[in-house]
Amino acid sequence: MLRELKSERKGPRKADTVVVFLHGYGADGADLLGLADPLAPHLPGTAFYAPNAPEPCLNNPMGYQWFPIPWMDGSSEAQAQASAAQSFKDINAFLDGVLADEGLAADRLALVGFSQGTMMALAVAPQRDEEIAGVVGFSGRLLDPDNVGQARVKPPVLLVHGDQDPVVPFESMGIAGEALQKAGFTVYGHVMKGTAHGISPDGLSVALAFLKERFAARL
Image (cartoon, rainbow, N blue to C red; front, top):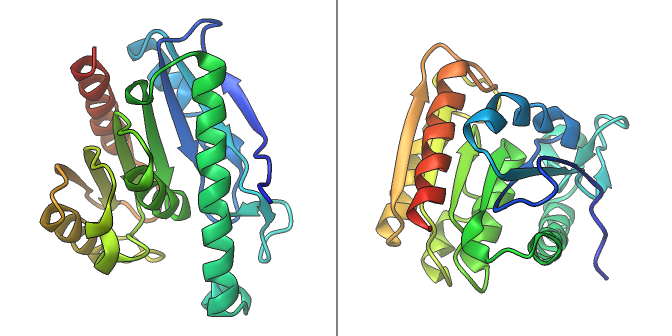
């Protein structure tokens, strides 16, 4: 059974492009939807969505999770895998609904993830029926690098990571980038120097440039 994802929307009544933010473990959609404010003036005609993950976070009842993290919350690997698989379906259904509501094709959609949200974005986007405009992944990793070659579509990917990240090791960026490139994806990368587990101004600027380029390329 699919779980409905609740989301706020920012943007014009009639949009011609859509950005969907996927938040990290223990956060909520509002945590990333604030990024719409600095991005919107440079992405006119873009609607921004930021759904809450479907499960209350085991470590933070005020926040949400796409799946539990065994070493942080005492869940089992089986629970984590089952939750991730269900969230995969939930996100796909949410994206289908957004595109239908906005009356837009898949190539007018981009995903922007942070941490656990990046993990879900990198899992979902390659398995969509149609290729989306692109994926921006902040401070995350590939959940299953060995199976990325089974992708149905290969949207361009921008990986952005702080080199002082104490939560998701900086090395995860290189592992993900190498696996995606070997599988035939076009991959870009940006290192946020001196940044821990977060999004720096330079990282956001690079993400904006990527989104503008990807949306323009699909006109």
